[in-house]
Image (cartoon, rainbow, N blue to C red; front, side, top):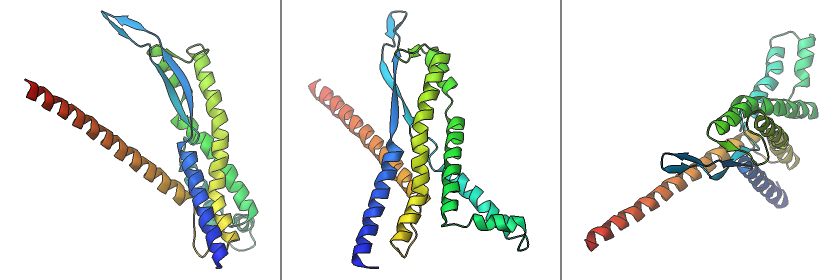
Length: 227
């Protein structure tokens, strides 16, 4: 590789990782208000919060499912004699071709919608909100809220699914175009970025709890010295 090609490959890798981070962290916040309730002498509710809907709710699961589906025709073609229809179909699913990448992206989009529908149920979210006195401003509780959440989820899942498909094939296209001597898969990047972000959130939460414990400990110490 030339020095210019190496620098271009490094820049491409950095941009791909940055795009994966943005895709993993991107959320659509639906505002939620809770009505005030008086129980005995205490007042509950009246808080304003939000429901974070991730653009990529499915994570790396659609890519794993799509990879399994794409490997199946080539695997079946290896067990049949040459010249049979199944063998011809297996040749169409050879990696690093435009038809393979197109079908791969379409299957990823399908599995993204499928897995998102399995993991996140708008009816359950709307029912839980209604049970605890929560509502979306301007939307009626119950069925209307479920329809609104489903509509928002459908809209934000489409760009997330397309971005997931591009991330799955873009590293291969970029690195083959630059003749890089190593593999750089989108699935590996998604897994590493997800683990790294989760680790950072865990460390941050532990540090925050430690900080609060320190403040409480100092407060108790001062109180004892004053007494």
